[in-house]
Image (cartoon, rainbow, N blue to C red; front, side, top):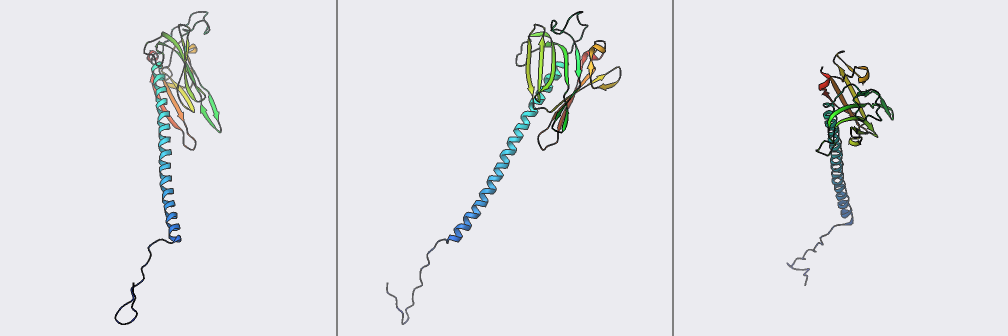
Length: 226
């Protein structure tokens, strides 16, 4: 190409070469890194929150399941005078109602750790729609922070079921109709083979860094109304 430097001819301008400098590329990469870090952090928080919600929902579902079975068994409480000379080792159909009051120390926190044992009729094994025994002595307690149902059947079998957890605290209270008050313990042997009118059930659940959550209900005992 000819270039004229005199006359009316003009010198064509130099063509610029498009591109980024190294500094511009480094700045762009830095901005992209910040954006991706923010996006990752957001999704990571959402994932962990969702995972925590699922764990909480499962714990609450198992807790409600435990309350359901416990309440169902309590409505079937049945007490009559015991057979003279019988023992719990020889008479698996022993009829009783006994509530124990105790505590458990977890770190620096004390949680209720009560247990309840009572006789019922029309007991059906969990997961089996066909009743296996018409009588049973059932014990509810916490073992390793899980609600345990232990059923001693009249046919001599003992069945243990894990119903829910982890549960930090289990508390029972018993309403005495004659005294018109709630009691921390109950023993049918000293109550003329009389069950309470109602039983209050409280589960305490706590996760690290959170306040304890309490689930409370009460169950009416038909045989305790008289």
